[in-house]
Amino acid sequence: MKPHAKYVWFNGKIVRWEDAKIHVMTHALHYGTSIFEGIRGYWNGDNLLIFRLDDHVERMFKSAKILGVTIPYTREEVRKAVIETTQANNFREDVYIRPVAFVSTETVTLDIRSLEVSLAVIIFPFGKYLSPKGIRAAIVSWRRAHNTMLPVMAKIGGIYVNSVLALTEAKSRGYDEALLMDLNGYVVEGSGENIFVVRGRKLYTPPVHQSILEGITRDTILRLSSDLGIQAEERPITREEIYTADEVFLVGTAAEVTPVVEVDGRPIGSGEPGPITMKIAEFYSNVVRGRVEKYLNWLTPVY
Ligand SMILES: CCC[C@H](NCc1c(COP(=O)(O)O)cnc(C)c1O)C(=O)O
Image (cartoon, rainbow, N blue to C red):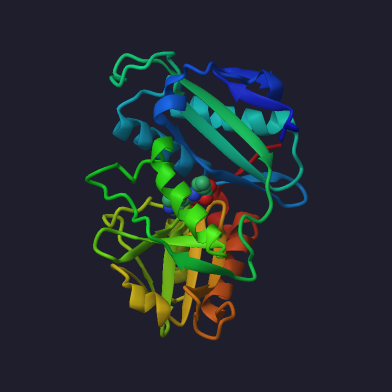
């Protein structure tokens, strides 16, 4: 497969893409015992701006704590690793950055207390993950894992089988994305995104305790909507509220702000991206490209 980039940061060294390899006995390969982040870097014509780097690093350490493993680097070292990987590859375009810490001991034991953890930082050019013109979503049969079964607030690799099954089902039914319900039938997330619903002039999004990933983009959107004078409430959302919403959109590092124009064959609102969604999407785009003074502290320039 063609390398996506020249260099990878791997356990403290910048190595060539083709040399960043692990053994088939690696624990995380068998049991999904990895934690990862998805971070975007935006090229604004002069510099590459990494969006909310510190928040992503912080969540990575929280995920490690929940899984019960220790990342053998400090937050500052992980932060620097992300920046160094980006500099080493010298990308001058939008990029996706994937730090992944994983239990690398070559063993089949399920007790990870004494096992070793490795860290890699991978980066590659990355444009739109979903169509900004709007997508069609299906509410799928796979439920979001309940947080009494798996710690879904942590970005643990193994948990993403839930998202893989959900998205693959949606795609096989001809849709672009999956919406997942929780055990009680509330719609809680996309396969890789948080969800927002517009009813009237108000925004609604599921609360953190409803088995969702506490998205950094979700947090950003709640702040930006407040700046725009749009009221937002965190509460459970029913399937019927999705169908009858004026607007629905998905948010995430990869998805950014993506309008959902149809769910289960039912047009959402006019069947076109809604005005509030587009206003928030435009504001978000300006923020991540360093055009909004108030949020420049969220951006880490690379060069
Ligand atoms: C395949 C996973 C991709 C990853 N998904 C991020 C993600 C989000 C949004 O979180 P944040 O706003 O912090 O990114 C919400 N919910 C899930 C299940 C996610 O995987 C991403 O980079 O967007």
